[in-house]
Image (tube, helix red, strand yellow):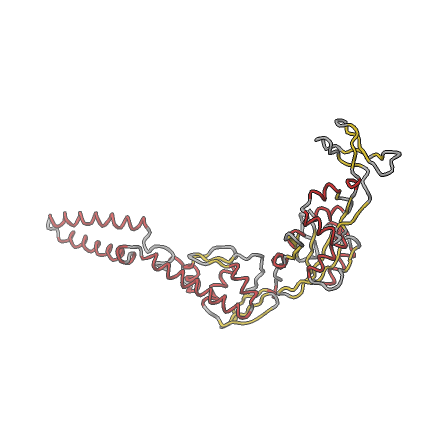
Length: 385
């Protein structure tokens, strides 16, 4: 609601509008002087009928105290309380001042473009301080050469606007809607710092590095670089970072590091025998048993030996594919792979967190574990490998 009023930059609130607001929010706007009195209205909507038509206000002549009325086609002449003529508008400078205080700036906000663009202060982030600007209208920034030059000189900047346009604002690393950056908690406006930080992209190039260099990994993130000794978990993690938002089976990670095809990792990428193959083996076994009985009845030693040899081969294959009680061996082996790969990646993330807590939090929020592992960053990171 406040966002829409800021964009208009004209009289936008009547006494009727104020009466419809939540009492605490209305008092907050008035006490903080975020809205100020404007000239009185000369037209009001009729409240004597249900048509909600707007009529011109007329002053009754010859009365000691001001008596106002409008003419309603349905109800005739209707008196209007003087308060209903009162109007308010948003004071953009006062709004900028309040936002600046919430950002944590001790001084008043700096006006960049009169009544349109203000510098509110700086927000600390992992990549250093980021300038925070507030624009009453995004298009006002687009039209202002002075504003664009000033922002460019200050470097990395984020823009807060009442409403985000279809395209992002050129010259800013992020554009955030006022309602995302601040929220009403029932008594006052509150800065949502996490929302602002989440909107900031991680700088590309050397800003985000996960590179194997011999027996070590060089890792950089948000302006902080360090090295870690190569480990299995870091190797797995590097594979996941190369394929953001693409689930990777644990067995594929294991096979990739081992330099073999995933299909060769029996008992992990799938059953040693899939269900169809196992049924075929069992059916062939039954056929061989019948042939074996027939061969014995005919005392055909050649057929007996051939059937027995093939039955023994089938039995060995089925034994490889099953464990105790005839259960598929795949589940036991796949569980081992899942636990081993997941544990290795988690250890790697723990070691990274000791060096760079922000990167550790990023991985904790972006990684999922299980039979498939996946790196799904909450915001895009341009990793260099």
